[in-house]
Amino acid sequence: MNHITKLQENLLTAVQTSPYREKTIVFGEGAEAPLLMMIGEAPGGDEEKQGRPFVGKAGKNLSAFLEVVGLKREEIYISNVVKLRPTKESPKTGKAVNRPPSAEEIVFFLPFLQAEIQTIAPKVLVTLGNVPLKAVTGEKKAVIGDYHGRPVALADGRILFALYHPAAVIYNRALQAVYDADLLELKAFLQKEGLL
Image (cartoon, rainbow, N blue to C red; front, side):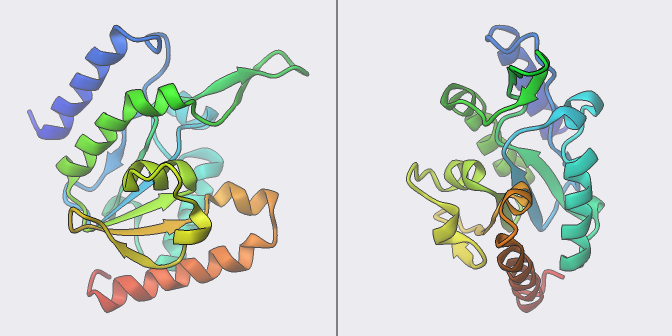
């Protein structure tokens, strides 16, 4: 049994005795020894249905991201801080809709993300938005505006490259140029480091 399988089994065991036992767990996936690990906030509806990270709308964003940077999905590892879809009831429809992860959900899943990072052992961590940025840095006051678009050395020797969450661009079109420039900076950094 490989280390990731063992990690997944440990997570499933922990979830069975938690308030999240009825939820679908969406594990990370990708290359066994990637240079780059991409970390999102939490799965959405499409990810919950398919049991895979970054599919549906998120998958389209990922495909565009990878095309700009010059990587293929199978070359990287993709995961989320929280491994289940955080939802709330829509007042209009009464159906489940996405919401940001709660502090309790982040605290519960953070040790599994940290173990996943140690097991996968990527050289570069690309975070999408504030939740994964705070999880990776351990800084509760970290904000994407202070970190985005440049490599930052972490205490464990890995490199953090923070990006705005792709959904932020949908809600704030002014961020599109910043996001696009950040992707080009990431590509240039990976090329300079001989990782592309």
